[in-house]
Amino acid sequence: MNNDAVFLKHFSMVIGFLVGVALCLIVLGHYLGSTLPEDTDPNAQARVEARIKPLGEVYAGSSGAAAAAAAAEAARAAAGPKVAYEGTLDGKVIFDKLCSACHSTGAGGSPTLDHSHWDARLAQGIDTLVKHAIDGFQGNAGVMPARGGNPDLSDDQVRVTVTWMMDNLK
View 1 (cartoon, one colour):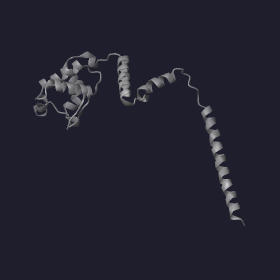
View 2 (cartoon, helix red, strand yellow; view 1 turned 90 degrees about the horizontal axis):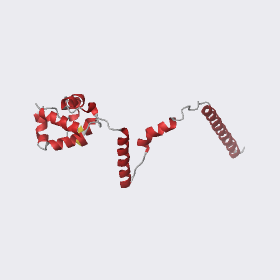
View 3 (cartoon, helix red, strand yellow; view 1 turned 135 degrees about the vertical axis):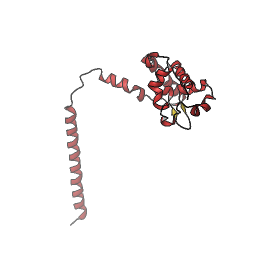
View 4 (cartoon, one colour; view 1 turned 180 degrees about the vertical axis):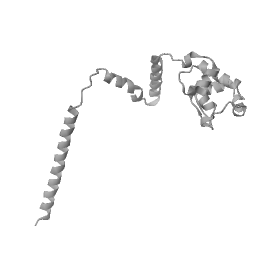
């Protein structure tokens, strides 16, 4: 008995079986794909593209950084002017609605409204504190997100809130 002929016969049968399974799966996939309903909304593709555009664009190098900044500015301008909390310039209102979540509890290492937490920071000057609140800041104890995590806050709203906080230290 020729062992090589037996091996080739069995190997050919296995390969033939696998090719048959692959063809059946291809036909099944084609059939299932053809049974899906067609999208009836002609604007669906445009909405998907608009939704993923900010995340789907790729910018590389120094010219890419400029293009990314320009795209972000264009998106901000297209979104229109938004002002948080109906544009109020009452620092207490903004503090109560946004800042108190961290600065009343000390969450994430944020300083509470105690002189012991703020005296060293106050030595840097109010303008530095406002800049850190606007741009965000990472200190030894935690992270201050830009504009307290609300990008709709105006610079003036941030300034009056920081000023209110400093005026109300215990």
